[in-house]
Amino acid sequence: MMETTLRKETTNVKKRESGHLWTLGPVVIWLVAFMVIPIIIVIVMSFLTRGAYGNVEMKFTMENYVKIFKPVYMKVLGNSLLLSLATTLLCLIFGYPFAYYIARSPKKYRGILFLLIMIPFWTNSLIRTYAWIILLRTSGIINSYLIFFHIIKKPIQMLYTNGAVLLGLTYTLFPFMVLPLYSSIEGLDKSYLEAASDLGASPWKTFLKVTLPLTKPGIVAGSMLVFIPTLGLFFIPDLMGGSKIMFISNFIKNQFLTARDWPFGSAVSIVVIALTFIIIALYFKLSGDDGDGIEVL
Image 1: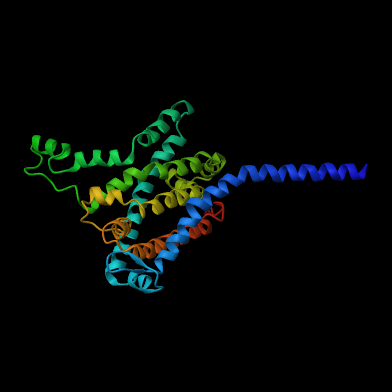
Image 2 (image 1 turned 30 degrees about the vertical axis):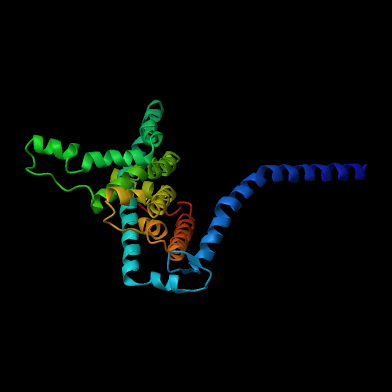
């Protein structure tokens, strides 16, 4: 009897292991083929040498990583980090009130409000970027109406500026900030807000000392989902910056396609990946307290 039970348990364990293999196997193969192997290739490439004609020579060197620390390249990286930070702050400033409004709206209206967020995803982001170009260019819709109503005398240069790039990135990544914020605000325990009101706290003080700390995981998650992709969206700086404004994303693209310096482009890519991992580590550190740090009213 005991042996039969052990055999059944062994068979069940083997079935579960077989089920896990069939379930996780394709995912593991996909990750290895399309993430691990390409990253290994990029890492190896970053230690090689560019040939005289743009080819890659199998000569080990650290020069590619040393070159990154030149002031001109560090300035590009610094400008990219500042742009990512500015994009994240703008998405947070405009996204938090929007997410709060959705979370506090009647349930019958939430679907419509969510639809407003999701509609941009139905159109390719490249097409939406071209739409902004039509709006912002000197002969575009905005300048035409401003001149027609005699608000300005000559067109304003809105396109091919830092502001245009910032606008394009904020517009593209805004939904990625709203969705985590909504999830965090919607799950907020209202008893905390009622307790703060009973203790005489004003709505603004309740927001600062109760709502904001409790929704910190959503703020951190949304900020990470905006900050990290901003470093890699090269087509928006190219199109809305007119290739006049150099950020780390289109700089890497130019190294591969224009300068044909694949080793240096690979080295810069690895540095950006390392920065991404640092940001993710900060995310886990900042969201590790599960929002228990409510201040005393």
